[in-house]
Image (tube, rainbow, N blue to C red):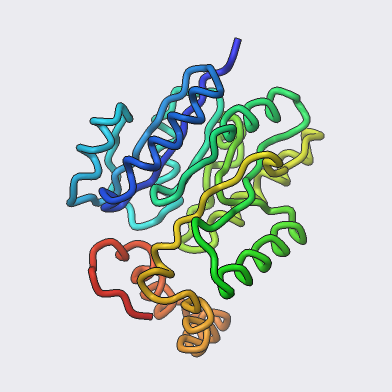
Length: 250
């Protein structure tokens, strides 16, 4: 009998993307053939995200934290599935994603893992970004994108690492270490991938991350020396408050 899967979608004012994200999950659920619960965690939403998610059949819960890890953890706490998957609301999963992740977990060889990331469109800077991400994943083994693991494993490591940035890599590191103790691997999907939104690049240009690093070099240096005040403001602008403004500048 196939195990129940809960897919967690953190969402902050994502009315433009929530329907297509849920649609991709439903297509993957159909191929999986088991029960798939979709949970949209509405984080400080003031738009129609909750309404649209509920209309598409998702379970909607509300959260007021300004930390993406806490938002994901709220979804995990509310989940009824044995297997947990997470995906950001502006992204999509390919059709075989749920089935492949469940099969890998059922094999008993994996504690969990992530997924390869492919942009929904490409240009030279996005292609270079792709290569850099793939190299980083292979070098560290800390695959992110779509997370998948048993709920009991997430609970055992304390859920997503409760930090404001790089929580995905920190969480992957915890799951990998936990799996090693249990004789299991932390891996990645081979046949499926995350379809990564390019909306920030569409808004701010395909070289946005290079420009970001050059313009905010002082901020990153101060953060490395222990002063994270300006870095926290930058992350607020790029992630936690991004959907609240129609004007996006680096």
